[in-house]
Length: 542
Image (cartoon, rainbow, N blue to C red; front, top):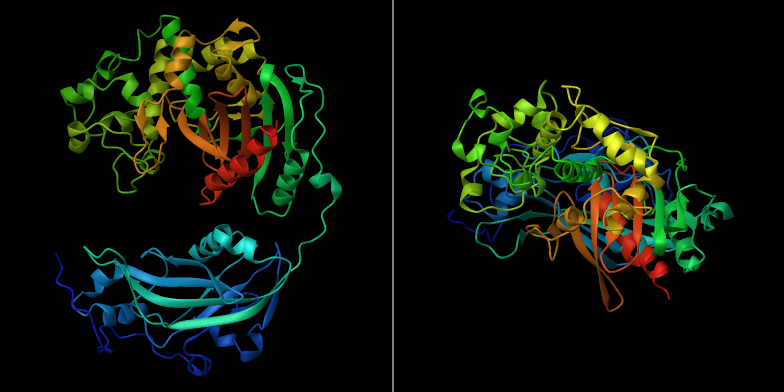
């Protein structure tokens, strides 16, 4: 354990900084100034400092921070006994956002944010940007808006203030240590919600479909109009479609946004993993695979791969289906040898997975850990086991019987369909897959999947660590939504960007949401908000 000495007064600097760089820096030490664009410090003048600003979807609102010292030296004053490297990885800046003198949101940003923490005394970051920049500060401002900022910034003029302090996470301390104020700035933010065309707000008329009847049942159209309004205002970002199927497989809502339509093939990323579960169920039913308890040693000569062990050979298909294998692989840990980002550059994804060692910690205690390479293995096993390969098998056994003819696969370097994700499909065809599971494996009265397999897939096989009452089945997720005083269990497929197929347990309800918010921190949380605050209340109004 580190012995921490807390400073009662200003300590000598630990590192040499860039100092006060020029006169504009000297005149504004301790200030956060707002700019309407990226202005280099050598070109910056007082006249560029904003006193008021109209915030719109096309804004490029920037801040420049003028500090008297570097963040490392500010942290050193909080814990003089820590080294520069310890300080660097134990804290950073705390940002506090105020609207009309009311604290709305506070965040201790990750220690990895920012550059040259030892020397920097002034820096510029965007809060909003239209160029597609990938700054930590943009995500920070988004989190402020998502955590009360949007509700606080109603139409009109608001006094907006940002304050910054240093913070440290000290070992065995119950809360972070936060230092004194080091910079602040404010301006008047003007919010003017633009008028929106009526066609962007109204509930969209459903066109006839060969596969779905149109539901006569009603829903709360005002809720849906408000949802459409929030999507049009980009308060819910990059949503491309919402489809709702209700009792007896009838279409209740079919809404498209941001240039998408009924024919759009959506890149649903890891939603495709759940399709792999369906293919496995069919392959077992058809006798190509005995059952999900078969082991890797039944399908591969594992001694030809690196890191052989008897334990690896005993990994079951069920272990891979439930993301609970003992492979040393985790997509949640960027340092994991089996992280998916290490797999993609290789020329043989199957070999990458089978070469991985086992994780001794997982040997001791089996638990859920998201592992994309394991689903690649399932796809390779299926491709080798079923008649004519997985691509033809999937088309013959699943897609054609359900009238799904327009779709697009991605492939592994071995030219096997990529079962880990990337299968593109239109929204109504995604809804068919949801309905297939909603109906226990039946499509229009025809048995496609064994009911026993559907039940096993849509079950709580393992709890998901660090998530309250969330579970995993056979490549399906499970969670609970609460509307009013009632809870509703739902199983779902999930893919990067906010793509979802929801299959409700005790409601005759399937919902598809497609989106393109790839790698954005708001992608999945905003879909939860859409479901809990708009779609479910609208559908359940009766």
